[in-house]
Image (cartoon, rainbow, N blue to C red; front, side, top):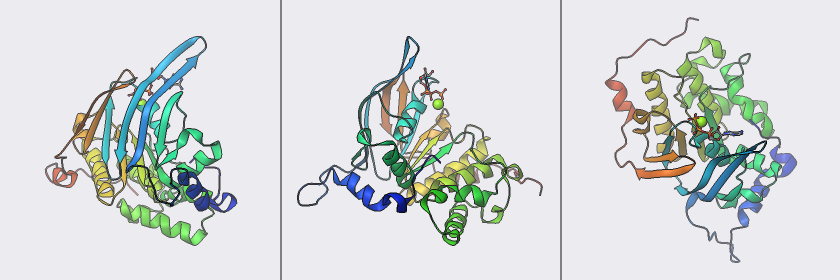
Length: 281
Ligand SMILES: Nc1ncnc2c1ncn2[C@@H]1O[C@H](COP(=O)(O)OP(=O)(O)OP(=O)(O)O)[C@@H](O)[C@H]1O
Ligand SMILES: [Mg+2]
């Protein structure tokens, strides 16, 4: 986690209200539209000495609350660059990004950290777990930045691990867990702060096909509970479980289509023989 602020030290809730209050009208009503994410002509240019790399060349799109979006496209087409900007881990060179009616471009480093901690959860291809700490401790990590009490930290983390079906594994270390189980710990860690958005960059990239669908089942359940999910994948089969497909090409959106009949991961799993992925204890 990149957050560097505790809510008490910076008045997290009032600060967030202040940030989003920018968009409120004089009567105090929220006058921005319903988009959770509103992106307009986003450009990202990396400078490598004298050479400029045009990673994003003008990307515009909106995501409403409750969507489940797959971002696809060839290697180098700008997907991770885009996700880093969505996740407030990097700033665009040009263009605007409104996240929950907050203009992210105007925020300081500290304010960005605050937004990341309160609104976003991240899941990566490589799980990014700390190897010498248990599943429970890995999930607790983001809460250390919130000054949550020890008791509440443990309760929230166990609850998040239950949500991903790992209640029985909370004291296991990452090397005592299968790849799918490690990714589920990473998902629990992303959920522990109750984010409104989960951003996942190739979360199934290191997993076999059945385990990938198990991870998609978790994402589908979270989405049913109202969490907005944006997921990068190279695999069209994985995108079939999402509700909208955006394809990037050369730093631009090549296509953006809704998938009115997403595959149901729970049903799909019934058709695939189960493998024993337990790791010896
Ligand atoms: N930090 C950086 N500095 C310079 N160039 C970068 C940086 N990050 C990415 N790029 C370049 O920007 C372009 C887009 O990269 P990006 O990582 O967003 O692609 P991607 O679609 O995620 O690819 P992949 O599917 O391989 O993960 C590439 O040409 C890449 O080399
Ligand atoms: Mg990438």
